[in-house]
Image (cartoon, helix red, strand yellow):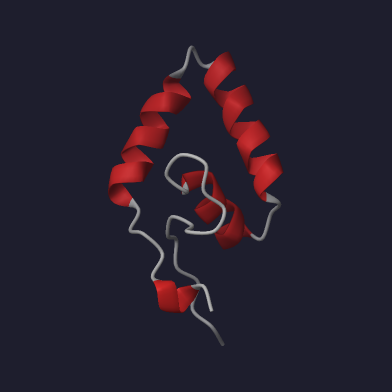
Length: 68
């Protein structure tokens, strides 16, 4: 069984790949994760931006071998 690892995505990347990595980890569509992130940010007075920045620094980048 393949071990799931939470990593920033290299392929589904607009800014840093955080939403793409979360979508891949949870098996969701990346567009849905991005829409949820935008709604979370707007309705929490942009606290989502802080969460995104923290995840960007904490989540490791996906390795090239992980994308194959």
